[in-house]
Every structure is written in C-alpha cells, then in structure tokens.
Image 1 (tube, rainbow, N blue to C red):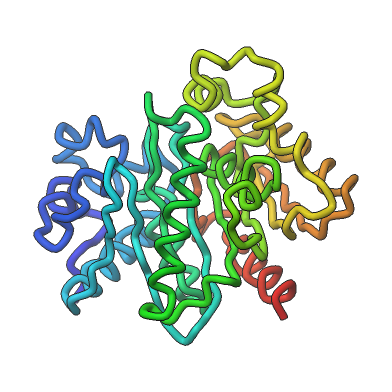
Image 2 (image 1 turned 180 degrees about the vertical axis):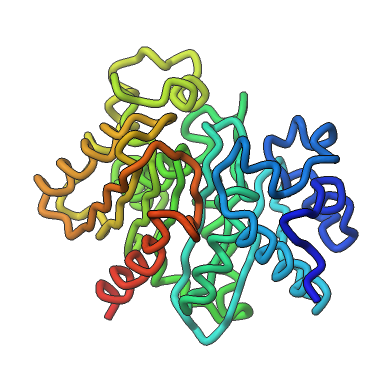
Length: 313
C-alpha cells in the first residue's frame, strides 16, 4: 500500500522520519513550509501546476529507497547537496536542476517526479541543491553544479552510473543554470569538467536581457544586474556556439511567468550555430509543469530521452 497520496499533508511529508536528513528542503517555498503544514499535496496545485499523483508516487519511491537503507540525500555543506536516484546498470545520468527563480530549489515540484520518470526511462538521476536567495550571486550556483558533478563522478562506480554520459535537465531558473553550464564560457569547460552529452531545458530563463525573468536576474546578478557585460556573459543565447551540446527545449507559448521569447531566442541561437536540437512549443499558459504527466506536455520526457539516446549511441 502506498504511504503518500495526493491527500497527504505537507506536515506528514516533512515529519516523515525517513526524510529527516532533507526535511528543510523537501517542500517549497521552504520559508513557508511550516505554515503550509495542513495543506495537502493536491491543494498545492493551486500554486504549482504539477500532477499530484506523480508527486505522491515519487515520494513513495523515495520512502521505499530510504526504507531499503539508501542514503538518498547527500549534504555537501553550506546549503549545497544532491539527491541520488541510481538504478545502476552503468546507465547514463540525467542531472536535474529544479527552478525557483533563484530564490528556492523546487525539487518537490520539478525534481522528485522527474528523477523517478527518468529512472523509468532507463537512466540514473541526480537532483542538485544549489545556492539561492542572497547566496545565488553568480557564479556561486555554477560553482555548485561543478561541485555536485565532481561528487557524483567520485561515487559513479559505487552507484554504477555512467557519469561521463550525462544530460543536464533544468527548469525555469534551473534551466538558466543548466543552459549556462552547457556553454564553454561560464560552464563545463571553465571548470575543467566533462562536456554534457545533452541538455533538457524546460521553460527556461535564457536571457539576462530585455525578455528575462526579472526576479531570477536580480538574484543571479545582484547589484550588477544592470552591467551590460555580465548580462551578455550570462545570457545563454549570447554564448551558444557550434560546440553547444545537443538540446531538447520546450515551453508553453503563453507562459505566464517566463516570457516565451526566452525559448525563441535560444532556438534561434542553436539554429544559427548549427546545434542539433528539438524545440517543442506547447499551447498553454502554464509554468511549473515539471515532469508534466497528464498535461499537453507529457511527451517531453520520452522525446528528450530519445534525443539523449540518439546522441550517445
């Protein structure tokens, strides 16, 4: 019998003893987690348009892993860490960076069910917990990505992950972070890391220019948010070249949070640079669908997985 259901309360999730190591991160926005206690998973869809059945299912998978003695969350200190969802088999890795406007890391909305979904599709998965809020000033979140990836590589043999073949999957502001990681200028090459095999960018913040998500830019660039040099440096579309990883990109055409023009700008930059990619516009206004089961975008995980398999075969 499943322990968590769409009717489970935030309090029951946070107080689950198996989740104690990551209690402070499990629900977002974390600063309101305590007062959200009486709310059910299903009722949270008033604020986040995720599929409650998928989230409850992911929580049950996490509980089962913990009850089998798996660690699940690894605290790297100073609010940085990762959730590990290994399936072994030396399968490739999907490295997930949830969004939250650089004010939070919304794994509850975009991380847990996405990790379980990519497990089902035959991939190992990891969710990154990176610096946000006043600590989100660039390049701190990118430093965190490098740190997390190094930790994963150190444990790849233990977890039976192929960490040399990895896709970076980012949502919203996490999509900006992922998108930046794909560039040589501020991402993987700067840190001496292995180039991502693919990028999965879901309704991403792409630009730091006119069409940006202002809240994300304000936190990521801080007091330097009006600096034209930094705006260009951290605008993904400005840094794309022919060596950018193959990319799967999707967003609702009337996205009510991040302007759709972000995806249009990136699609144009990838096309101009000759980068293999797939762009999936979705009719609608929603932002925050995550793994998107039971929505018009539910095919995105399968299509992204197909692109990933194609480019690593």
